[in-house]
Image (cartoon, rainbow, N blue to C red; front, side, top):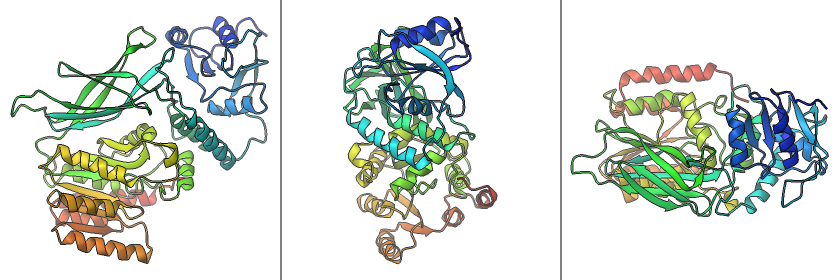
Amino acid sequence: MPTTLPGAMPFLVFSRSGFDDVVARIGDGGAVLYLNPGVAQGADIGPLRERDVAVHILPRAFDPQVPGDVEEAARATGREREGLWVEHGATVPQADTARSEAARLEPGPAVAEGAPALHRRLARTAGQFASGALRRLRAEGVGRNLMVLPYHGFGNGQRIWVKGRVLDEFSYREQSEHDSSWSNLVALYRRLESDEVAHARVLAHFGGRTWETETDAGGYFAFEMVLEQAPGKGLAGGWHSVELELPEHQGPDGAPVRASAQVSIPNASARFGIISDIDDTVLWTNVTNKFNMALMLARSNHHTRKPFKGVAAFYRALNEGAGSNEDNPLFYVSSSPWHLFGPLVDFLRVQSIPLGPLLLRELKVRDLLSSNHNHKLDKIELIMSFYPDMQFVLIGDSGEQDPEIYTEIVRRHPTSVRMIYIRNVNPDPARIDALDRLIEEVSSTGTQLILCPDSVFAASHAAAEGLIRVDRLGLVRSDKREDDSAPSPA
């Protein structure tokens, strides 16, 4: 084996001695290390990143002495088509990945011939996720390289709501339109397998003040901050930054771990708000079939996934309003887990759909194959509590319970709902009959529930109701035609 290892290469390392050997023999820049959890700490990784060496932590501890673990670890790197320098001959104890035996690094193919088909890989990964979820780490985070993952918040000028999560740091590789199905699945697996950190102190700094809270068992935290603003001197509309900090945990630079959460404040020009579902409303997910939804997520990412036809132009028109510059705020409420926050935000940006706060679901093991409809109802109530004088346009689909949830909102807040648009994705006659009954109930309050075949139909109705400009209909039709002519995603 050469004294100096090639610098611009990916290395798959299972043990501490293997890590020390690689670090001692690689040059600066170009190298990529994939490590078993626990092999290196923040103090080891920081100097490497200063040398432009990328470090990634594998989703679980792999043992090269266990048949199939080397191949599976290689696939977890997302580099199945490239060569890896792989540590062989290592013995990885269950409780400690460090060892004293000499390591051996050899070049070789990342995946053996006859790799299992996608559906077998998916089944195996789902099993690993389920078992991993049961053994989540609940420690205080001692010796762990932590990160704060902030979500988009919102407020009303006098009050701000911010949510986030504290996790073991894990570098997610940026996805592209060229990624394979397996690479997409690995990226999804990494997000689902991220280890949460419970009972971590979190500080929020805004406007010269500081708030404090603690993460729950799932690693989540939330702030509802009441601002000391003089009457009539609330926050200006637009996006504001709330600085988050873990005072008891330091990053590689020795400073406390920090992150910034973006908070949306509606402008005074806003005439109404829009609350939209995402699953099967903005983009097709087949959320009613959990296995097919998993396949869709594995086969695509935010570059290749497409919205429903005409949705992007319709949502831009609603954001602009009838006056073109109303800047009506959008809120997205979904049954998707918070693990998918990043990909969903990237999807909205790539598709030029107006960005707004996303309120997703905390994923628990018992919820993997079910939907929590109370989650949507609670989150819509939370949004409306911040804007008691604002009317809302609610947008969803007929596939699950959006019509029932929105009807309940109308019962509770009959003057706060301006319009309901439901995309008809379920042609079952029994479902249509149920929707007819809901339409009749909602109409008795003066609100309309409109069952729509597509975005052009909804946009035409919105233009007639003075919600959007009539000349925006042409853009929605054009957007739909472009979507019609675009290649269908896999």
